[in-house]
Image (cartoon, rainbow, N blue to C red; front, top):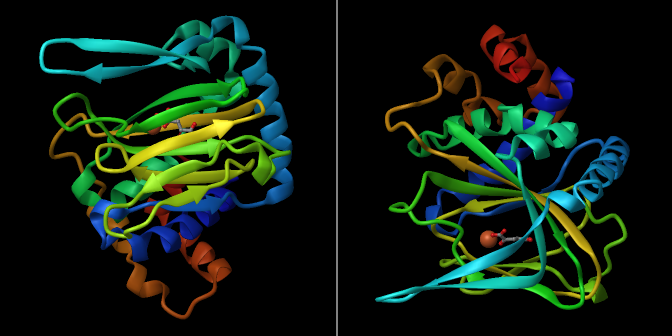
Length: 259
Ligand SMILES: O=C(O)CCC(=O)C(=O)O
Ligand SMILES: [Fe+2]
């Protein structure tokens, strides 16, 4: 378990480091490691999500105008909020993931300016029949503490003709990027800066979103851990060698083992 998490972190860092220099247009999309285990995990996660049908509510978009805010319900997008204790109890696998600080710890080390110190989760089922999201930002610095969006897709049988791609509009890239919502794909982007939408989906589509937040200004990953993960030390080494050396470090072991 420890090695799997450490290896996941190394892969994630390698994706993120070249992108983070561009700040505004940061995004990363990666297949999670150990495909066989992922498929098994995705099937059980999906079963858990389907069992939650009764606790889901329709997602709505808030259109903010000068004098009023209009709320538009989306007919096909059903969501369950993990802040609801009933949902947490009926979705133990997702709850375990919600309690896991690995991704947040790693991202805090790579991007200390974000000072990530909390996370919330929602589960989503798009019923198909054209279900989609209009173009939007997930948050705003003045509205709440969410700073990074992480979405894990759970659609094993996804085909391009099903639609439902996540379309990102990275400011500096100059053109839109489509992410297929394939099982095991994890996508990361800044919650307040990345415009995005979901293309109409002709089939049922499932995903889980974690929003990583910055609640306490001044919170930062320990310096000793930042040194351990200093990417210059990785130059020329294989992923397995980096994972091994990471696991030798007591400070890193402590963090990867933390729930
Ligand atoms: O379903 C997706 O891929 C993204 C959904 C989304 O943009 C949101 O929940 O804010
Ligand atoms: Fe969004």
